Image (spheres, rainbow, N blue to C red):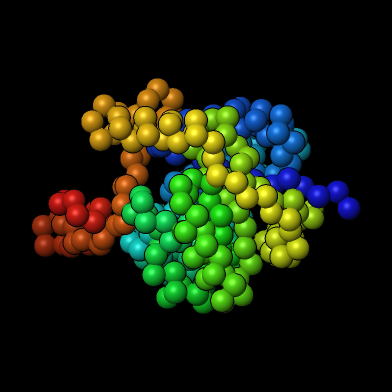
Length: 261
């Protein structure tokens, strides 16, 4: 059986903090011998859809989304419709399942960026399908160890994620999988998959520091980052707040924790 080199957790320039174009990802995949990518842009599936159209039969593309919820990030795979940000993690996961997709808990115990589920992951156990147990952006091995312990304890299938945000760094982490054509066969494949785990190179983290520094200095993102992104993504966990849409009518919106609306 011919195994497929599969890279999970890929961001394109449809994410506000990534600069890889559709063409960059396809070219990088071709040069690295990657047969499948799971594209998980922030709060949109447009980049994944465009990449799938452009790649055609040359590259298998899983349509995914990394959703910003009130408890942290949740990833949906095999999506047909985008999931709106600002929902609870439970509601976002339910909407993924409603369209036949799979729910992944990405980097659940990474505390650096404030966007992981953390202890909320324990309350989402009944809806999680897969746990990301190695994320190439984790500088410390401790979050990955906690994720692996969590997955082992509750017997979740696992995968490893590149979490690529900078072009040219597609595949430090990947899995060799048997051929699959949908959610059920994908789940079966990862249960028997062979995982290659490695962090990103030092050059990748230098690029991360550059992007973060520009943001902190309010200089804007470097050229090319978020080129096709249509809205800014909140950086931390979201908290629901009442929003007045017209006199006498309140609805629910969201803001970043610790930032006044």
